[in-house]
Each structure stands twice: as structure tokens, then as C-alpha cells.
Length: 92
Image 1 (cartoon, rainbow, N blue to C red):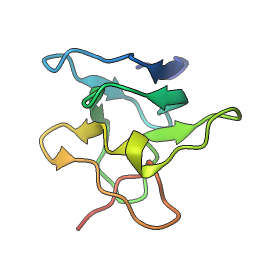
Image 2: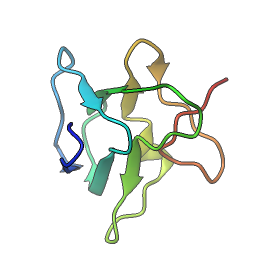
Image 3: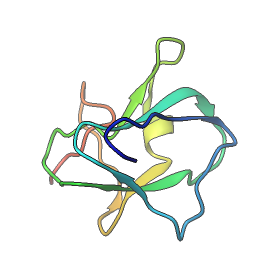
Image 4: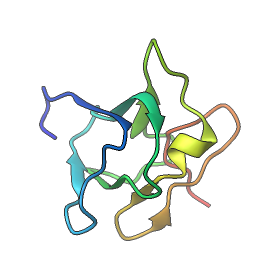
């Protein structure tokens, strides 16, 4: 997703496993409603710095661990969470 793009996901939305969602710096996926598919997207951010936002909730939907667990990071496996940092990259 380019520097001015918006990527919203909800319900049964998903991106094919062989198509990674590339996020340029400062871009993220916004979850606007509960996700129902088990694996919705593989995210390939421009950098893998701990604390970088890659997924966020919207004003009408609070992001939770169930939502975030449906995303994975390219080359790293599942997206890890820390308390209070939903949707950010966490380096173990």
C-alpha cells in the first residue's frame, strides 16, 4: 500500500496467501468490523522495527487479540502482541 492508500478490512475480507500486503512507512491496515476468516492477510511492512503499527481498529471497532491473530508478518510467522500495543510489531 502506497503512501496515500487506505486499506480497510472487516467480516470475511481476506487477501490470498500468495499475495503479501506491502505497507510503506506510516501505513497500516484498519479493521472496521469483526473478522471472520482465520487467516486474513500476510503483512510485509517496509521495516520490522518493534512498535511499528501495522494493524489498527477504527472508531466503530476496537481491535482485539482475535482480530490481530488473523494476520501474519511476512517471513516471521504470526503477529505477536504486547499489552497495550495491539497491532504493532513486537520483537521477541
